[in-house]
Image (cartoon, rainbow, N blue to C red; front, side):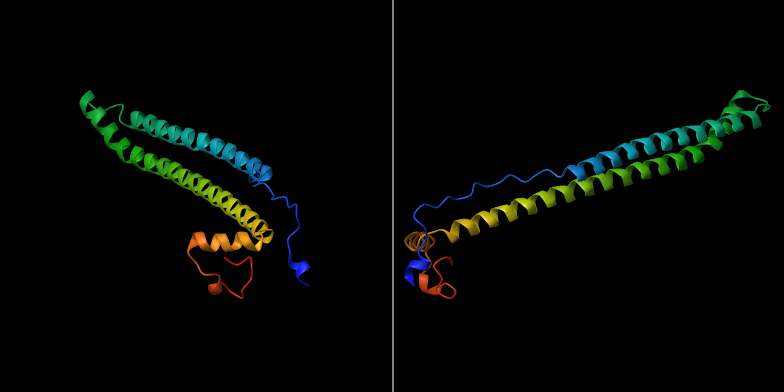
Length: 158
């Protein structure tokens, strides 16, 4: 009966495996990044087109003002709120894009850390499954834990 519980003479301990890259997720993220850049170009061009159109309309409406100073003041007065609103909308768009990109990067980092932790736990389980009882006693001694305080008295419980 004791022979069943004895570990084999030659045991190979598995090497820690590096997390495998997620090719499908990488392709999807690069496609999303390409879409973001395309939409970003559209947003910038649309914002500039709206400001240019407002400038053209303001110049047309105030073309017959008596003095050049009054004309420039009138055009600047009309364009100030327009450029402020367009700038705010475009800035908010890029802010949301940067925030979502940062969230995606943080999620990817958390997923990779979780995968690394799971690999480490699998390796630890494999190592503790093949650890002889004498090594278990040495580990208890190093940790300063008495073997009697382990759960169930198992030789693999640290």
